[in-house]
Length: 253
Image: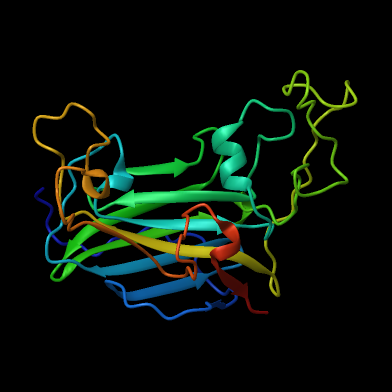
């Protein structure tokens, strides 16, 4: 990959007087992120991550999470299972749209994707560029894309559930309309938050047509030099979509 170093810069039409953000986490970990900057206006959150990496690889445009990347995790309602539910059962009643929990991935090669489903509508953009010590990725997220209200019937008993024993695409009782309530973050709010850096030191497996045989998924290497490191995670069997294990982003008044 050949990319001249240019400090990434997003449009700043909404930058201005805003409110500060504060991050808290339960554990301190040694990772390859040399610097992380957060700036939040009244409408937008900007997150810049400066990654120190002596071997930058970006060779998988179909799966940017298997390249060197930065991944930002948002849990607006501070409730679990948003990521798993949307990714596993998106056709069920009361699952989509869901802006309560999602993942924004940007590779060092400027390939960006949203998970767990592209159906989720998020107003965001990101830019990546090489730096003298690795790469930098800046991400802009509209606060109007983050929902702090739990609209999920699997965690909110006030919501009408899906007919899981019959037709899960329909409600139980039948005839209900899924009308999610939306509230964006405001000063004084706290949401679940995490930043992950994927360090692809392996690249694609030669001769293997499977585009997921890459980076940490390489089974032909022992040991595998690639890694996947979370800013916050305190479980031995840490799982990337375990929202309860993430840190906290506090919007200070």
